[in-house]
Amino acid sequence: MSNPANPLALYGLDKAELIDDPKLAWVHQLVLPDLNKLIKAAAQAGFNLSIFSGYRDFNRQLAIWNNKWNGLRPILDANSQPLDISTLSDEQKLHAILRWSALPGTSRHHWGTDFDFYDPKLLPAGSSLELIPQEYAEQGCQHALSLWLSEHAQDFGFFYPYLSFKGGVEFEPWHLSHLATSQTMMNKLDARQVIEHLSNKQVAGFACIEQHIEQIFSQYVTNICLPET
Ligand SMILES: [Zn+2]
Image: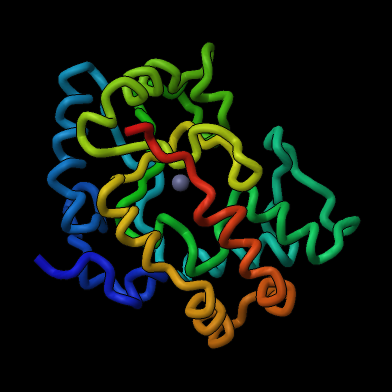
């Protein structure tokens, strides 16, 4: 078994530790067995547990970031409503994006350990998933799946890093993470390395990011909800 945290893999720049599963796409080799067990157990409970968004590399996250910073993709507020970014300072814009989207190089989706789950069978006919909390809440189409996952995901080694809002990333009831593998990754992340990788790419807002990188780490990257042991 290879060391589960080679330096480039931490930042979405290397897929050597991932397996390209024909059904699930890129998943960390140390996560795939537990993920398959989770999906099988969900199927036995009547759910078609599916990945809406799993592995995402640095460049994909960079495109999302730049589109949001440049106003080509909406930045949502806490109620999932689009913000008018023309009224925001760079620092305000930084925090508004970070509420829902990670800085490239710091996304948990870079690791192959984290997944946004849904059940396509539960969607009303003709509609597609918006990935907003209301869909997972009572009355929401994904509520039954959400209840099942909150009860059983931990049995397969998964947890909800964004189980409640702690002043950083918003509550994300769809996002599950493989605890053991993701903790190894997170503990090796290095803010200076992120800045180095970002400085080599065309990231929008670089000066503001560089100035606030320590705060970005403490408020959004390491500020997660760990399960009680
Ligand atoms: Zn996610």
